[in-house]
Image (cartoon, one colour):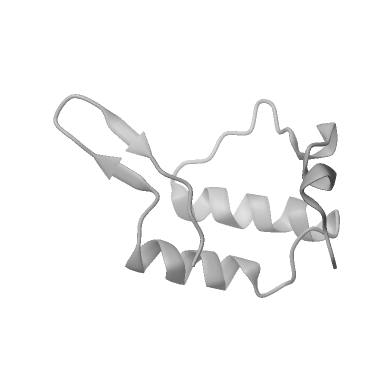
Length: 72
């Protein structure tokens, strides 16, 4: 499952009309799509849920919400 950065810039990874009711639903839906396409392992969903509990991507401020994508 070795992937180069250029391999990630593909229309296959652009999801239009992709709605989720919350982050857990988003992770569930993404894990299904990304695993089906061979980009993540079955363990990805649990790992991303655990990482988000420790270091959330979304930061909530009074007037704006900010997302800072990161990995550990």
